[in-house]
Image (tube, rainbow, N blue to C red):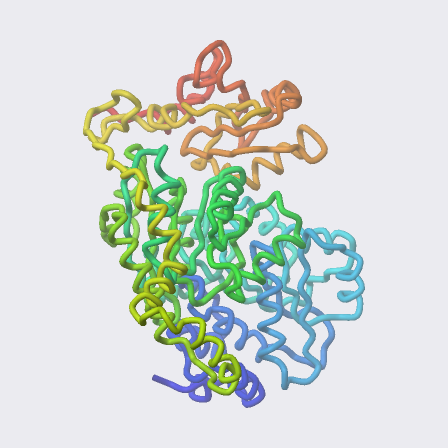
Length: 585
C-alpha cells in the first residue's frame, strides 16, 4: 500500500490530513488521486458512498488551484444541502495549511444574500447544489467562465432527483477547456448519457464491482404479512441490542408514523423527512451523528448527505422501486472495513423486488425467520448482564455510601439482589413478550395474475405490470392522479415538480409520488386536483402529448380516457406505442 506522499500529495495537504487522522490511502484514493494529479483527462469513478471519495477528488482539486487568482477555478456539484456543506467543510480542512484558498458552499433552503456577498469577494472553489448555482449565475454572482475543473459528486443521485436540465445548463456555461470528474455509486443509463455528452476521452475507474452493494454488507430479508411489518420491526430492533441504524420508509407520512410508534413504545428514535424545517433536520442529523439518537427513521431524499461511518444496520421498512436507491441505502453500512447488515421487511407482493436486486448487485439475500420471544429475551438478558459486569466502579466516589448500602441489603442474599437488578433492567421485555402474538409467515404462491399476485413467468407486458401497481388509494384529503410518463421517459420527482411549477404555477403541494417504468401517479390536495389535470393535459414532454387524469375516474383504476391505451400512451403516438408494446414470440 502506498503512502499519501507516494501518491503525489503536497506537504501542506499531508500535514492537514494527518491531523484529521488519515494514516494511509483508502482504495478509491489510491486509484484516483495520482491519476488526477498527473493528468487532465476526464474521469468517471464508481465508488460507494463512505469510501473516502471526497478526499479522492478534493485533494487533487486543491493542488490544481492557483491561490494567487481570486476567480472561481473549480466547481463541485452535489445533490443535497447536507452533502454540499459536508464537502465544503472537508475541503477547508484539507486546505488548512494552504494560503489564500477560499471555498464557499451555496445551496437552496437558505438565505441567498450571504452567499452573494461571499461570491462577490471571490472564491476559488464553489461547492453547490445545481438549482442555487444557476440562480446565482443568472443574478451575476457566480462566474463560471474561468472554471477549469468540475466535479459531479453522487451524479446518479442528482440525475434521479431531476437535475438533468440544470446540469446541462451549467456545463454549457463552462469554457471549452475544462476537466470533468463524475463520482457515482452506480453506472446508470443517465450517468452514461451525461458522460457521453460532456466528457471527452474519459477514463473509468471502478473501486469494487459496478452496481454492487458494499462488499462488507450482509443482505437479509424477513417475509411477513403487511399488517405485521411494524411488529416485525420491533422484534428485529430488540434482537440487536447494540443496533445503530437508519430505518428507510417510502413516504413522509409513513416515516413519521413509524417514528412516532417507536418513540411511544420507548425506543430512542427520531424522524427525518422533507416536511420538517431545515433547522429540525439539522438538529436531528447532529444528534444521530453524536449517537444520542439510536434509530433514525428517514426517507431516501432526507437521508442524502447524512454521512455516518459506524452504522450497524440499514433497515428497509419499505423496499424502494429503484434498485439504485437500494444500493445507496445498503452502502451506508459496512464502511471503513467494518461489517454491516441490510435488512428488508417485505410482504409477498415485494418478493420479486428481492430477486431483481439480487441480479443487479450480484449478491444473495438470506431469508431469515422473525426472532422468537425467547431468542429476543436471551439477547436482552445477556446485554444487561454484560453492562453490569463491565460497569466501572469508582471506589472513592461510592465509599461514603457503602455503609448505608450494606445496611439496606443486610438481609437480602446475593442471588436475590442479582434477580432484582436484572428484573429492573430487563422487566419490560419479559412483560411485553410474555403475551406477545406470534408473527405468522405468509404463504407465497406462484399463481399468475390472480388476487393481485405478480406474474413470475415473464410473460406479462410492462404496461400490465405497471397498471397493477396502481391499485392503491390516496391518503386522506388528497386525490391520486395518473400521468402517462414514467422513468423510461426520464420522468423523475424533480422533473415532476419542475413541470408542476411551470404549468400549474406557484409551489404546488404534492403528496406521495410513485414512478413506474412507463406510467406514474402522484397525489395532490383535493382542492387542486382539477386545476392540475387541466393544466397538464395537452402539454408536450419530449415531443409527446401528456395526459393527466384522476386515477380512479369513472370507477376505473388506470385513470385513462378513450384516447389513451392501457399503458398510458396516446393511440396516435405510434412511435411511443411501438417502442413499448411487448414483442410477439
